[in-house]
Length: 293
Ligand code: C2E
Ligand code: MG
Ligand code: MG
Ligand code: MG
Image (cartoon, rainbow, N blue to C red; front, side):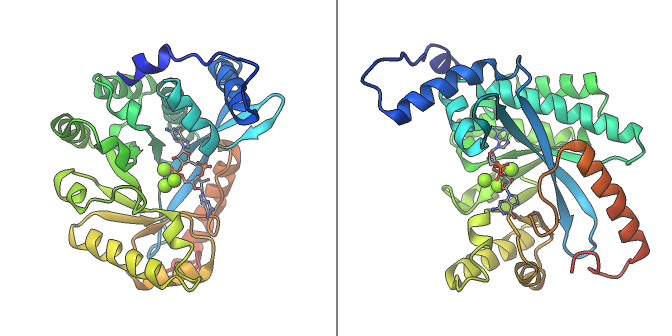
């Protein structure tokens, strides 16, 4: 449905346009050509276990290098892609890249590292989603348990039965599914009861406030971690930028974290080097959290 809506929704340029809608108009028409012109790329950011220092997975994040305007951040172009129904194509392109990347890393003896891919609601709610994922995994010769899918709460606003059946099929295939940006959307506790998620990711907006006199954020973070632990759902803090934040999260029994403090999102070659070095550090100093703290 969203796709149909999007495909026909060409914005037409007219002289009365304000600067903002003119920029949107230009970006959207350029975005349609970005894939074939090879302007998209993927960077990867690790998620780390707070207690063992082990890397559990790396998140794939799309980048758009516009030939004239340079880097356009995903927070700007993803919503534009959603508006014109192009996001499904972009998501699939990222999935394909990520799968090929796992295969390549495996051949380079990095071992098997799981990759998390973000799916927009439009994409996640597609009828043939599971089959397409299976097909892509087969093409890249990737074990399904090496794939993780991150969705946000907006993806849960569709038909509940359909969503549950999709999540159960993915679970049966051993594909992990995470609930991203938890706390900022509708944050219904019922979601955690009804839908079989393997992980919740606490939105970085909360994490950034826990050391910043954000008493309320601290209480919310503490509650989400406690709840996830009680429900045996893995819990990840995103946007961890300082050691101080990390220490608090460790005390609160958060399992994993992600953020600039550990590693920025990196292009594949740089991430490969980082992971190789990190592995060495980790095996040489197996103390609890030495490599992190
Ligand atoms: P997200 O999935 O919640 O990803 C986390 C964002 O936080 C990323 O922004 C990441 O670069 C950033 N980040 C990581 N560590 C830190 C930190 O310590 N501090 C701060 N301030 N930020 C940190 P990015 O790459 O700009 O992506 C923004 C959003 O765009 C993502 O949020 C996701 O919702 C969306 N996105 C990115 N790639 C894709 C994609 O391939 N498909 C879809 N559908 N959405 C994507
Ligand atoms: Mg994400
Ligand atoms: Mg997030
Ligand atoms: Mg986010």
